[in-house]
Length: 243
Image (tube, rainbow, N blue to C red; front, side, top):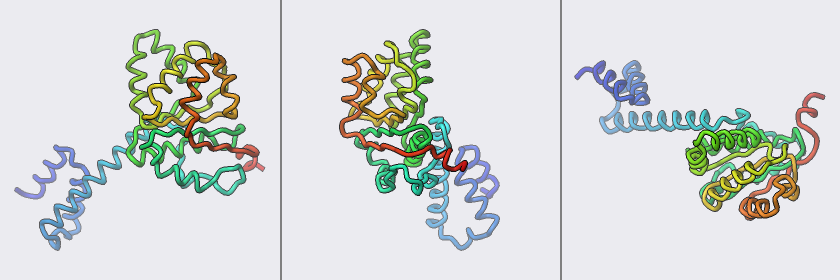
């Protein structure tokens, strides 16, 4: 079998990483210096890396983050009560294996959404399933799903996410149906999957947002205990950078 036929078969089998690596080796003539086991190892490694990269890209697209953020781009210099050591510990994503939550609070413009997106991006790099939602949009989707019968399927998809990010929590009142939907989502994930919530309101104010005391107690009991807390402070970063 000639090399062109081999390349054609690789492409047909969608071994794209292997295809690109073998084609590059043929162009450079370096393959002649490799032993058979070295050649196979190099091709397999190229295929593995290519699949991992494509998996990460799919995860990032599916997550639909608010910002194309990363831990490396996070501002740790501007004073805003962001502990770099804590952020870097969370960046190793071990909290996801333990099903622990993250609660990020702080005034408008202090970087809550960016940090939430950066931690979600890091989870994608680790091969985790992540989904980002603005809370208002999530509650709208839940209402529509109830109306068209897709609610159970949608909630099951959320349950399978390794990290669910709920941003802008508490900006608008939560009605009865939204409260029940939130409770169901948090209950399904409790102790098994991680949830990250970002909010302008401090955690003690969340009871008032949820309003109904029994549901508020149930939701917060599952969210807050053993959660990692990041309480940002200070002026808006957008204001600081514009001056």
